[in-house]
Every structure is written in C-alpha cells, then in structure tokens.
Length: 285
Image 1 (cartoon, rainbow, N blue to C red):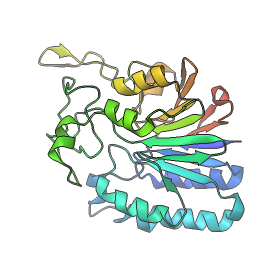
Image 2 (tube, helix red, strand yellow):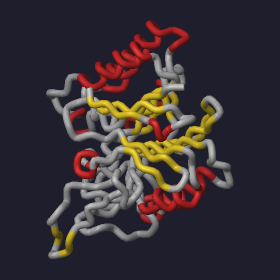
Image 3 (cartoon, helix red, strand yellow):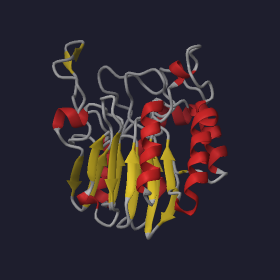
C-alpha cells in the first residue's frame, strides 16, 4: 500500500499542480497533508492574491476534478491545517469534507486500512503574530524570542481559559485516551523537540543576550512519541530542518517519524508504505 505525504505547500499553485499530476499518475492509496496548505492570511487578503477564496475557488475545484478523473482509484485524503493557516478557513475545509473530497482529521481519529489515523495541528508558541494554531507546550513557558498565545492575533475567538492554559500535552492525552497506538498514524504539524526534524536556522542568534534554542519542535510531542510509541508520525513546520541536518526520517524506539517540510521551490513528496514506514523515500520535484 503506497501513500503520499506533503506539507507546508503555503498555497503554491505550482506545487499543487505537481502534486495533482503525481497522484493521478501513481495512484496512491492515501494522501496525507500536514498543514500550512493555504496562502496565509496576509497573502490571502492581498489585492494581488490570485484566489481570494483559496479553499473553494482552487483546492475544492481541483480535488473534485481529480476525483472525477480517477473515479474509484481516487485516494483517501487526510488533512490538517497549520500555524500559517487562518482558522477562519476551517469552516470551508469542513464543508468540503462533507462532500467526500478529503477528511479533516485535526483532533479526530479515523480508520484506514487496518490503521488508525489521528490529526493534530497545534504548534508550540512561535515569534509569529497569528496564534490560531498555537498552544503552550507542556507549561506556560515561552522560549526567548517567541510570544505568548494571548499576545498575537486570532481569526477565530477562543475562550480565555483555552488561550491562557491549554497545552499540547493535555490535548494529546485527551485525543488518545487509553487507545492502543501500535497501529496508529499521527499527522502532526509540529515535529518533536530535539530531533533531526525540528532544527531551525537560529545559530548564533540571541534575544537580550540569551542564545536561542535551535531546536523548536514540541517537547509534548516528543514525550508522547517516547511514551505511547505510535507506529508512524508525520511532521512539517520547520522548512529548513532537512537541509540543515540531512535528516527527514528518524526513529524513536519503535516509532518511525517522517518530515516533508522543505525550504526550496520544489515539491517535497514523501512516499511510504504504512506497513513498512522505515523504507519511505523523499523526492524533490
């Protein structure tokens, strides 16, 4: 069973066109899309934006056309949003999911070919102003150079409690409960902390004379993988990490962790068999 994984396309129509062509040519069983899929609020609201309603005017239309051409060979499509995707577009994503062109899996679980697929969009606090998909990680600590989830802007309001106290660690415990994760595939946006997948280009940078940590992934996600041992985890978010470390696939115990983040103009496509994820391959197209 061959599956595709992409992430951090950021509304690039050239990347999407390559992806649609590859899906139609190679006919994967499933396509996993790991967030930061849309142009982002600043580009989306620009008068120069090619698609003012990117989800409906572009993505939905192309996925419907692809399904029409592929028929019964159309893959399962699992997707989440990422920290650069305004949450105000979640409603359109959910509406499209009701038509069957994709399955929105943030905070959810669904069955797929003998596996269970889970999705989770939130990332730890960043320096960026859009906070729709940011959460405290394991505590209310924020790294130097980053801002608290309450200090930026949101496109969808949340409760004061959620903004000030919710953590990734608590979310993951709530989503999975006591589930057996030995056949679980997790579609995360954030990578786990201090791995080859979360290395940012922050070498030598300081804030108020405090050196910045070059590893910017989630401690909660790292602890979760170490303790719960899911079968496979998929990650994005840190575009330059694979270039800096040479690593896009890593193991933690029995868990295989894959990243499709990329900081070049190409489409980074990870192909994997969920029965043997350690044999995954990555192409820059």
